[in-house]
Length: 163
Image (cartoon, rainbow, N blue to C red; front, top):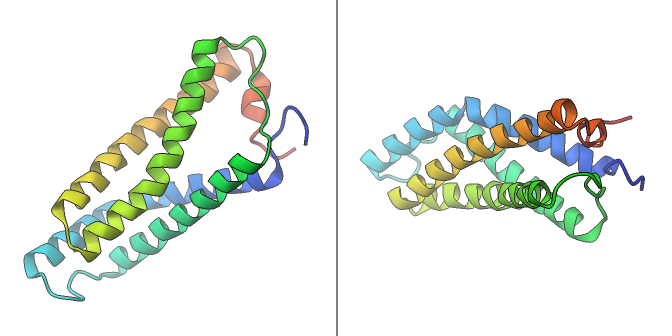
């Protein structure tokens, strides 16, 4: 592997999860409405709408892709941070990435527990992690843009892009 590029599987999983999360955000309201319907009726099968099914399938897919990505991350090398990057920025970057793993693996679990138990507490946890995820996404994008345009570390952004 190149010192400056992620492997093709790393890139594929990164962008697949990014796209699926974007789609998931669009359809989150459909699942919320379905969950409310299920809680009000508390009958098996109540609440399963097309939007809810789509949201559940995407959530499971994202969770599984993130478990795969975590396994890949733990068993393969990744490019090191630029040498001129401060220790504080490196620590924040590492923490942000590990939080992504925790949220994107934990969130589908909380969502499934909320649905199948059913549990308003798990639904609330799922909702809170959704807000944390949006903040992480904004922070991640801001960090990539910071490296590219302000710090001049153009390789940081490019290492997750093919070619």
